[in-house]
Every structure is written in structure tokens, then in C-alpha cells.
Image 1 (cartoon, helix red, strand yellow):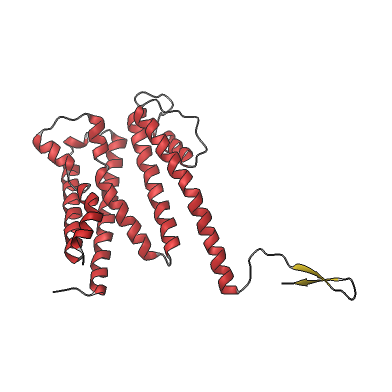
Image 2 (cartoon, rainbow, N blue to C red; image 1 turned 135 degrees about the vertical axis):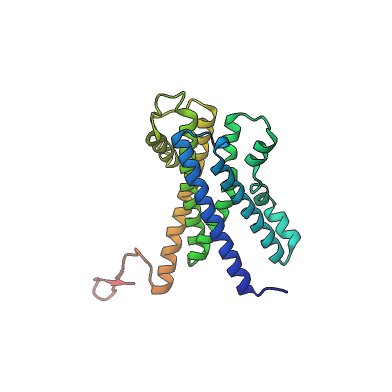
Length: 248
């Protein structure tokens, strides 16, 4: 039985909201474990929750694949989101595969990539035009990256960098690098230096999007009003008197 366009859109919206909410749950777990120094591989509650989240993510992938008109095209475009939905940490823990703590910590953030897609789609549904959807989706993803970068920076830098005494310093560092202003806190680890480059690059990408968004707002305002915003009246010289009068 082929679903109608309305039913397909409704099912996808429910799935995206579910994926987004589960991603928020992962963020809460990761934040608590980072702040309290909990070994997440030994935290059975977190491992069960991440397994549940990954199962839901993979189920969402196959449901959307079933509803897609061109299934091969869907596979080609979305295969990456299936790969990031695999519960790598649970597989590593079950098979007792030996990885460094740094690699395992980064693997915790892999499922959140799938949540970022759901976030951008939900925001797209809530905004009125494509330009607004692009700006707000990128802004939400950028804020998420700033938060994740601050957590990773705290995890990697605090043990070896006396300029990072607490999370407040890590968050300040991430925000200042994202705005491309820079900060008086300098990373000393490889992970910290890589994060500094990523944050600066995302920050530089944000300013052109914001400029295009404001330009689009002005153009829509002009098209509705039939006038030009910020335009000054022209001075037209009258040939008979030599006086000037305003003209639009």
C-alpha cells in the first residue's frame, strides 16, 4: 500500500522529532559523564540508552527507505547517516576490542551527527522560507558544535593545561574561537588545536550566511512595500525657478 504525501510527511516529522529528542538525551548523558568524570563504558545506564538510540536511528533509516520512491537514490544520499547510527561503543564493549580512551570518547559523539540532520529538518519545517531554514539550521548546528567542542576541550585540556581550570573556561574558549575573535587560552593538545581550526572555520562561514539573510529580508520588504529601504529622496532641479524639489 502506497502512502499519501500527507501521511509520508507526517510520519517523517514524527521520526525526526523522535530522533532529535533522543539526541538531546545523549547530550545530557555525555555532559553529566564529562562533568562528573564517569567512565562511560562502565556506565550501564548510558550504554543501554545509547544502544536504544542507535536502534531507533537505524529503524528510522529503514522506514524512510521503505517510503522513498527511488530507494537506490535514497541509499546513495543517506548511507552516511546509517553508518553513524551503528552502536560502535556497544560493539566494542561486547567484543572487548582494545581502543584508546581518546578514540572511545570521540565515538560517543558519532550518533549525534544523525541528530544534527533531524534538527536541521525540524527547523526547516518551522521556518517560512528556504533562506531562513538554512540560516537557523546552521546556527543551531553551530551552537551544538560549540557545546560539543567545549566538552571535548575540557576533557582533553584540563588534565594538562592550567589555563582550563573548569568548564566555564572551556566554554569561553569555544565561543571566542567560533566568533574568530580569539582567546587568551591556548590549546596544548592535538585535539584542542584541531577544534580551534574547526570552530574558526565555522565562524567564518556564519558571517556570509547572516549577510545573505539580511539582504533577503530587505529585498522581501522592498517587494512588499514597492519602495526601496534606506533610499534617500532625489533632488530634482526645476528648470524654470532653479529650485530643487524632492522626488522618489
